[in-house]
Image (cartoon, rainbow over the protein chains, first blue to last red):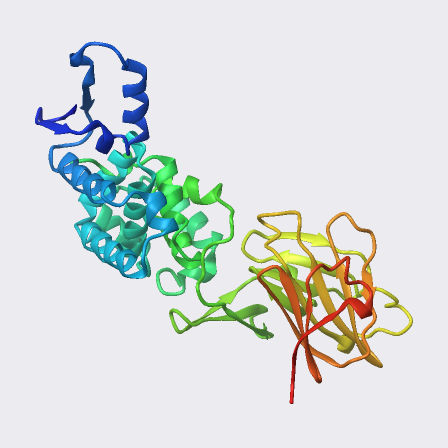
Length: 164
Length: 218
């Protein structure tokens, strides 16, 4: 059993075989093999407890249907079912998706990383830079020159609505 | 709660990989970090439906493109396309011919351009109108192992191939009228008057008799 501790000090116990889907955790376990039980505790410092919960739900779903099997011999019906499940799983607010990307990035879970990134791109599609800025609450920090001259002129054709 | 600006460059690049070209440019105007990633991430963007490229708009000297997904026009300034004749496109690359009749492959997204060898026997007989179609087997942005197939017309339709590293075009004689060609799953297919031909291995098929008929029209 592996214990994950989130930044708000909540503990999550997960079967090693399940947590192995994180390549980072797998490497850590491999490194610490044969050592004390206390070493099987992994701190997930940059994310709150909501995220490990989601990550574990994702792991469990995929543990029941490992990727290799999923691609090689999964029936069409099962594949559709998994697709539907994933669509529902990623149908969440953009901040949670952002946290999922961060978690998938640091824990090295490629399929989760891929799915969350794709969902974010879906949300950002066909929006202006201002809208994306509002959604993501990012300050652009551009200099006056960049904002007024460089950016509008770089790919002028894109900005027909925004600048021209 | 994590901050959006905490996303790694890998993550931003990955998100960008799912975006179309206009979205990618808009995305790059969100903040410094995203702009940096967009600038150094030059691969061809994803696009489900092809864009329709139209003639140059003479009054503003810009090419007009139509994007089906948004159902709108874009006027794009691409100086490289001025005075060029356009013969075909594959994987976002354009096959263009300049006034001196020299063919080029040009990628309007990344602005990469490279010159191809002069056409076979072009000086004596070939004319701009004789160029029918050019297609690529693979995306030159992703591999150097690709083939260009050119259909041209001098009295009858002719075919020529070129691959990176070769100094000349290789011609394939064809006694039939070839009206179209496509590349699909490793093979070139040619639509002729009476047959659909498959060219499975270009080099092995340089002789006409190796052309295999895969279907016959009634």
